[in-house]
View 1 (spheres, one colour):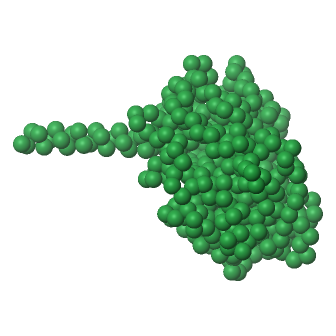
View 2: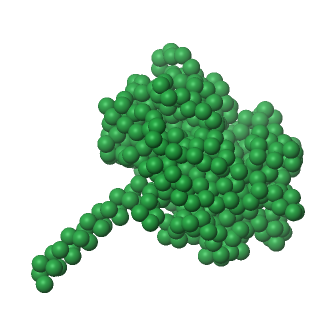
View 3: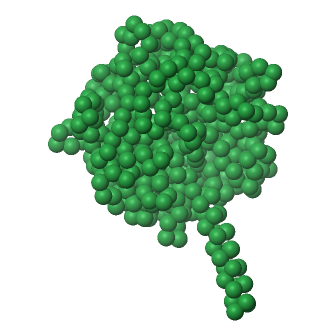
Length: 490
């Protein structure tokens, strides 16, 4: 009996190890976590191995449609699934090792651009990155679907095992909000930002279509996972104020944060050009503690210089709880997360880019009580002059005083969203970024000083969309593109 008990314990430990390893490799949401840090711990991905990265030519990776979303990873039935949602309103689940199709689900006809008042995506289907709930074995997404009543935003829950539509779904967003006495015009609204789950509620941010047409608003809609018919919502007081960023809604585990864009004809501040904090009930901010807007927000409104193009970054330095906001005005705003400060209440403001900042940042810790934030822009305070400084890495510190500075800049051509890998959460940081709609190559830089480590010049990709981000695992780096996912391996 004692021998069998020991064998049982050993088997249990092995099962625990493999289950834990599988769960550790899962990527359930945009940039891997609710804080959207974009920080992946890959124990064997050192600088030396990064230099040997190459395109895996045996990886199939074909998907049905243009891809603006980030792929997600989940383990099911002996497979590690790479799940990709497309503008054709198709969700493809691929074998993450081979790229072969495991299952596919169409959720409805996408909307041709000719049926929308403005925009730049044709057709328009699933744009915001879905989110997976591991315990429910479900993936949730928003799709704009062409129905008999015209374009409608429908929220779906699908089984990750086979793509089956779950009970209670889809939820028609416009109809659900009308039942609350709120007006939501599906053709004016676009769902670009990543979805997030907190306390059994699915949160979906909305902005408008490219071109700012129609009377859209910035929205955050919450759908109960226990009862999908139960919906809550918040919207900007003024028209406009879209939540455009691919990172969508951000959480520090206690609160939700969004960044909004320019509002229209607002003579007083009405939720635009702001970082706003919510509780899970989405009640409007009650005081200046719960929102921040730059003091020149009317000028930002007038010139379409949104804060809402980039998600806020949550940072914890010592005992300080911080938020870093990034604007199309090229400025970085450091905020106290416990007291956002109202109008003009930033702890520090720094002009860091000579071009608009519209991206999804990535964050990693420094060794001296500082934090580093990587983003796409055009560095205006780079420590040394380089050609095309499109990757900016900021250093944020609170001692001796709150400050933002540019640690280093990386040279590349393109508009991807960076991620970071480390070997243990701190050591050997590597910043990765693709030159989307530019050189269309994969680039790697040493996180400590910006030294270039790798450029995939021998394997230029095709069909990359701006803001495209990378998913990192011990076996592959995945880059989504129109009609396929590319896989790189060291």
